[in-house]
Image 1 (cartoon, rainbow, N blue to C red):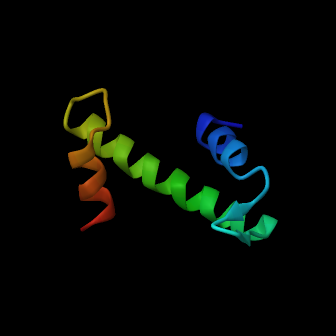
Image 2 (image 1 turned 45 degrees about the vertical axis):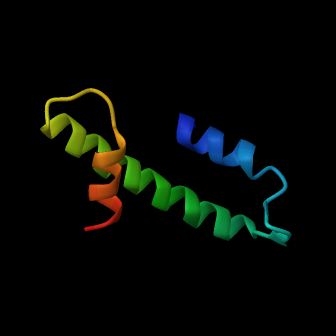
Image 3 (image 1 turned 120 degrees about the vertical axis):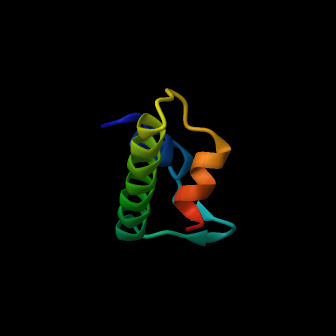
Length: 64
């Protein structure tokens, strides 16, 4: 289990989002999307020869 999974699971222990529960399947889908976003941001950061994902990079990944 990587850090992303641990953080998401810790944040969603109750699987509760503004009073609405998330099913385990919905949580798994969310985890996969977050992992994909972070992987893309990491690749972009390394391509830019940097070692830290910043807000600019994350915006480029999320807002094409």
